[in-house]
Length: 183
Image 1 (cartoon, helix red, strand yellow):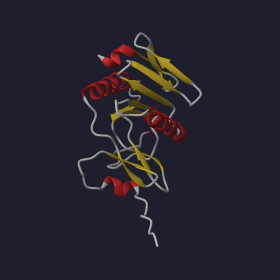
Image 2 (cartoon, helix red, strand yellow):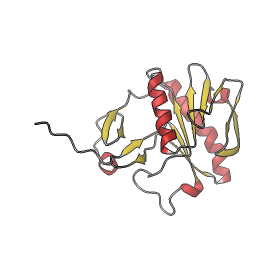
Image 3 (cartoon, helix red, strand yellow):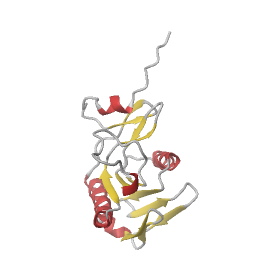
């Protein structure tokens, strides 16, 4: 007789001891992520977060975070962490932010592609974000210095270094040269 393990909840996941590895919770199951990213990934992630924050903060439009877990579905729980996320001010919890994960989907999720990421893994993450209700997903490719923008799985725009990445329809007026993400 086989005994199936009980799914892990988001609260249990948050309290798990650090085993030195990176994890996410997908449908109640612990998944191990690749080793920590290298310099180029980290710099690109920082640049992406920085340009968003420079636009969002003075306008009080919401919050920009990096590698922060979001509970995007429950029963069983799924906690995912995009490389960069934006949550609009009107969707943020009032008062003190929770000590744990936000139980919402970010308005923008940006995934910076690492050399170890496969195309199917990236498609799966994009689909997961969009199906959960994320309004805009940016997939940032440091190796080719390009960005693929998903407003849905059928509304996809590929941008090169000379193009401008905008935030429509989430952040009207936001725009940055794609090349700026890689400097």
